[in-house]
Image (cartoon, rainbow, N blue to C red; front, side, top):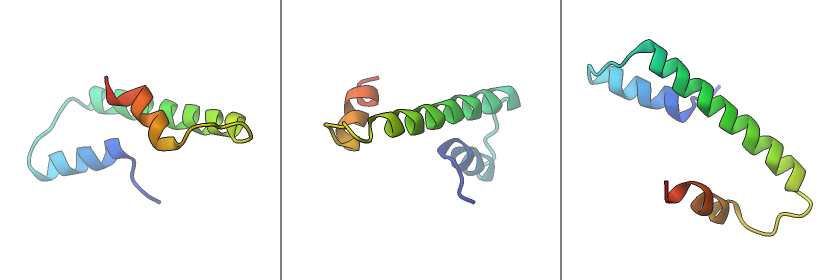
Length: 65
């Protein structure tokens, strides 16, 4: 099974001796989980009528934040 971005980042930080609060890590994992679930659901709903590409959606939704 693959790693999520949050899990990968945590592993990279720990390998460099950088640690952060476990509670923050769990909160980030939960947020990422919700984003993945929402993205899947939205993609399923819009699969028939999607008029923009995934890259455009990402740029409009997350790039400027």
